[in-house]
Image 1 (cartoon, protein in one colour):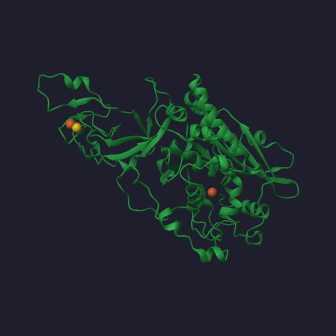
Image 2 (cartoon, protein in one colour; image 1 turned 135 degrees about the horizontal axis):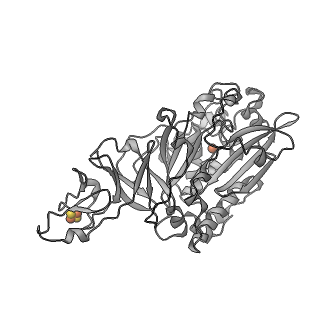
Image 3 (cartoon, protein in one colour; image 1 turned 180 degrees about the vertical axis):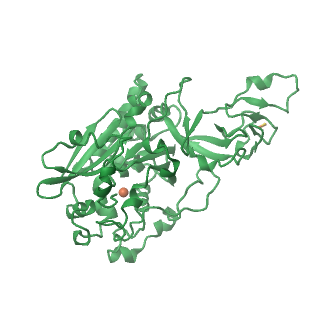
Length: 445
Ligand code: FES
Ligand SMILES: [Fe+2]
């Protein structure tokens, strides 16, 4: 459990809040490049960290992320005309460029210099491999972009990015990624070991649904865990995963050393989160149907279905199965244990449980057990990073982009080996490991 005040401190992301300011020290994935497809294409409403903004791509292809409200009389710039290297407010014609400079003020006398005195809030943006990154922090000299491996691969075709909105606080959403014990229930609760190939990761998971042990460590980038179950007589199946400040996870799916997958839980506001799935050569597609699983787990499809795209601050990347329709739960499938939850889709199973805790879970009422040790340490880490910043200590992740050069996944180690040391090499990003192709144990979750 967490005190009400710690819970609030950890979850609130608006300007001036400790966690909001801690996140603002970092570059943030703001919007996918393909949402601004062409020069002068339609502006898009983007809420980030409780700030209402408008993104647009100007005539030169540069991306602007500016205040949604015109500084003249507060008209909405979403309705603005995106023309000739700027967004023009339709109320009185003031026009702003991607830097926030007012480049035209036709409602004032030509000789007036008022336009030089007016700026609109504009956050610097950088595009890299399909992601528009933005910096909302205090520095005029910008820190480097983080070394997020799947966003830096040389071949664009090998990379994939998709996003989905979640109606709850970002910590609550990301806690699902660092909670390894739910796999054997929420996602695989209806599966018995005899349906799975011996030797697959799922087989070990289902045979021993509760991991025998967790080892959680603090790292320079955040927190990591190794969760272990027996594999064979002389070996252990380890699930290795990370939390990286301020909101990234690397989950223990697929094979450690081979999987290139980073997930970001970007706060829209205190009660909504944009989930980002940033992957290299698709770690899931590779494994489906291979020894051990995948297709033989009902309700375990990986990609959700989306509603038609809306234009509101909360309108982008909403899922078709959602709270209003109880995530299309199939009670019959639940009753007959065809699908443990009755809800189809891995992402939706996670989405339903985390959203239904309420937008910000009342963590004073929890009862945390030993399987929650990663969740506990990660919460502490977010809180301490936020408090430390107030005392002038900036998280190491801001100025050391190489801290993100990690990988996660499952691996089999001989009994008696310490996972953190033993996996040090396998956890390194930007290393080619063709020898692991054959090590596919089925896509894990
Ligand atoms: S409110 Fe935008 S130009 Fe007047
Ligand atoms: Fe999950």
